[in-house]
Length: 185
Image (cartoon, rainbow, N blue to C red; front, side, top):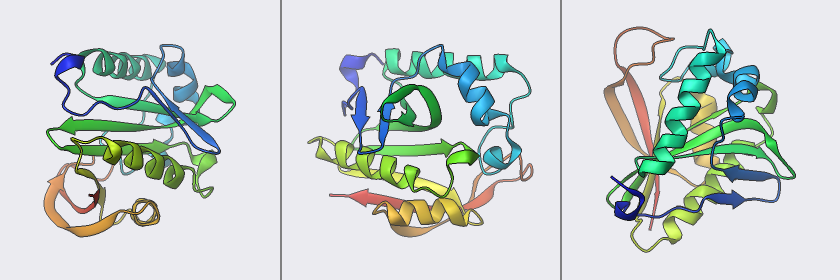
């Protein structure tokens, strides 16, 4: 898929009153590695294990950059507005027809400040403003109370529970149940 065939075009950058969401850069890898990819608490409910070496994060950032180029996905690096060089987290948008599925992560030092709620609201409003986007959705593990609160505070509605939905390698080898949340128009 090339960028011209992406059914929902998303902006390359979004801003809120405190944050900037932008395309990833190669230089982000070392900062993201230091900020959160090696942190077991951050990785706990993620689909990846904590990174043991910078090379893992470099490979991930290369994947993100290629995702933008190919149109496969739209990963955004989250930074403080005015300090766009220092990542504090990421939000990844996977586009399928009229729906955008999102995943997100935030460094532990930024937990509790409602940054992710702010980023999620800005992103979902921008996506739903596109005439071909009717739904923005996200899932979280049933035990991930913090992520569920982020989604609810960001205007998402809990739609149900998905049994045996996703493997979270930091919690075990078997698929776990997830909660499905969405915003739609």
